[in-house]
Image (cartoon, rainbow, N blue to C red):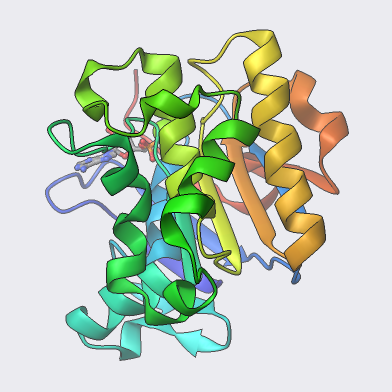
Length: 224
Ligand code: ADP
Ligand code: MG
C-alpha cells in the first residue's frame, strides 16, 4: 500500500491514511489496534472489496484498482483466503459445499486440489472437526465450529495470501491453538503470507512481525 487514503461514503468524520505498508511473501503478520481504528477497513482495501480514493494497493504486483470489478472478484478468489469476523458461510449449504466454494471461482486454486472432497475432509480433521460434519448445514453449527469451517474454506487450494479478521475471538483456547497451528503449517509448507487482525496481544509470539495500527496508519475519527 502506498499513500492510501480511504473515507467511507457519507462518513466524513472517519479517514484512514496509510503512507506505506508492505507484506513480504511468506511473512506472518499480526495487526493489533483498538476497536474502530480501521483494521477491518484496511483488510477490505487489501482484498479490493473497497477501493481507496487515492493511493495504490498492489497484491502480487497487481494494482487492484486497475482491474474491472469482475476481474477483481476473480483475482481476490485466486489470491486471497478470507476469514471474516462474521463468517459469511452459506447457512443453508452443507459444510462441504461451503469449504469447496472458492474452488468454483478460482481455477488456479482448484487445480491444486485434485481431490476436493478428500481435501475438505482433511482440513476439517486438522481443525479438530468430526468427519461426519461434512453434510451438516453450516447454519446448524456452533459459532466456534463455523469459524473453523470458514478457516478451511480460506485454506483450501492454498491461496498465496490469507487475510483473517479476528478469527480466533469465538474459539476457546485449545481450538485457537489448533487453528493457529494449521494456519502456520500452511504458511510454512506453501509460503503463504498471513495477515491477521486481533485485539489479543497474547497471540504476538506466534507471528514473524507484530504491528499496531498506530505504526502504519493515521486514523481520523469523530470526537467521542
Ligand atoms: P476496526 O475493525 O478497527 O474496529 P473498522 O474498520 O471496522 O474498525 O471501522 C473503522 C471506522 O469505519 C468506524 O468508524 C466504522 O464505523 C466505519 N465503518 C466500517 N465499516 C463501514 C461501512 N460499511 N460503512 C460505513 N462506515 C463504516
Ligand atoms: Mg474490525
